[in-house]
Image (cartoon, rainbow, N blue to C red; front, side, top):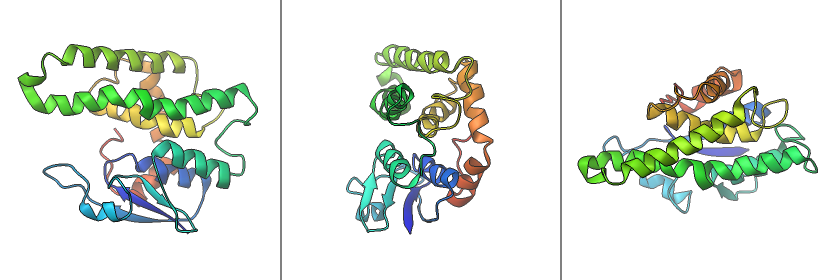
Length: 209
């Protein structure tokens, strides 16, 4: 059986949600952040080479890390054609682009904002650039969603699951309301039964707001 090594309040929620959408059986092993440092516990390093989540243990014992790689591998091998466009289509190319874009570009300014914000005035010289990059990415995502229910094609795909964390982090930082298409999209995703089941399996998820 698949085993999701799940850290609370983390990207690994996406993997629980993916497996719920695909109705695949899996086990959850939970890890709790240090309440002071917000870092993962050392026990996670015994599973993931970086000590981070998500980490997915496959049925043959191998462990995959990186959300995009996990989503792509699970859908390709176990999805039975669900949650991705046909691999010879133009939509598939866009789908792969979103899978990579989420962590390759979009998350960086959001994480910089999160960490720099802890420095107070020491971060002041950096904040205009960080804020500008966040606005650039969120505006791009908002434009891409205008008049659409999904990022790619006519139904939910792994691209929506992967990109949802970007929108949720923007909400945590109080920056999503300015982008109505983006906000409506992620709120609709959060109402999906599979999303809600993932929260039940994984435990409290403060980003789902």
